[in-house]
Length: 550
Image 1 (tube, rainbow, N blue to C red):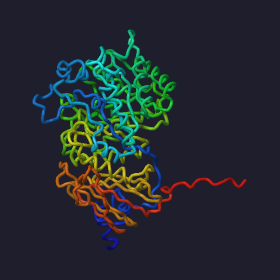
Image 2: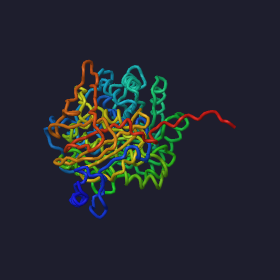
Image 3: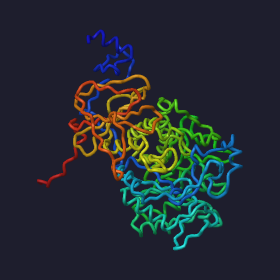
Image 4: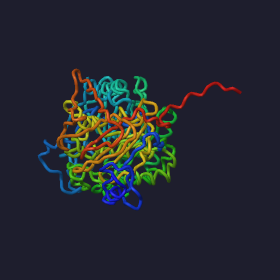
């Protein structure tokens, strides 16, 4: 191709599609480079070895009323927040929420062979056992637990249930992240939080071999009353109680990381799901909460780009046709930007933990369990790793539409296969791929896990119609995920369906050898590229220091 033709194609904005090595600044306004150089990619960050992790709701452990499946919703939610608040039931339904949105489910079987095999496949990880219902869960440290929770609580966690959670955590190499019971039942006559219940629960955990790697005081204090706090609970009361919790944790469990504040739903844009509160439930803003959390080890927050169709009364909806749009995918950055401003003021230099995230709050949208959401899932991991977020805990492993596994059969959903590939290839060193992401093409790079000098690249073609191409100077092993239809639950890896084997074994996931040169990515496809021979110097282990010669 001659130089004139190359400049012409650059001007047309299709250099990336055709794999042209470079475009002159005068020939195009396209900010993308069409060539990747794995050997020269510089380090821009580090993440935790357990960066990609997951939630198991406390309500799954105890059993209780969780989000009703869409097929079982026969009555539409109330049309306004005030109607929803008046329809709520006391006890096991969060304050201000319609009881029509929930359905009882028995405790999850954490001994299930398939469940454990799937979770182990993502290890090492963290398992966060928390959620809104954890705020009002009573730990019954007795041989015979009460049939009903004591006054001020909404549920009961038995010894056997928690022993099962500890055993699961150990079996799948996933230390526990959690939050404390903070409801009315934990408080004295003056409304001040007391650590008695937390002390019994954490002591039991330690005595039986459990590891609490990190803890928040309160799950989502943004809407504190919805979470079980006293009606007039405010940021000042939160600060008072958090200081009590911090002193308790530092003295009695110094090896547990303290995370705070655990806020949710605030954003630099008006789609933030906590914008304006919900009915008469006021918002406690992260800036007011974080004024008391400077001693924490990390800044924790939750991200949902929308609320699901179940909670239409809250507004803040999205749709399947927006699932690959720049606006939708970029919401991850907007939430983090908001909380970064708070972090920089009150907790400067502390890393971020995203302790809960999914496609949408309230159990996820109907397409959360399809291939369509895998773009959001992986794009989010790629974005956050570049921006000081060291741990991301997806909500959930199993429960509801946003679970990685089917909640009845524990069969993998598309996001599980995406998570498994991330775990196998993307190491803890985050690299700059040397390109700027834009409409249709998102690229992320890490050191290749367990391969010195190797580089792993994640390429998301979010264009539903057009293929894209990139030039690579080294041979790679290619792993491309596609689906016959974007809303399918069945996923193809290099055109072969992904299925569990006998005895719930994970399939052999073989790469497709790809020579150096132009690599093409089909529309609406996800590709991991492993370059084990990249010889990137920042991806080589640092040799141990020898004996001093002095």
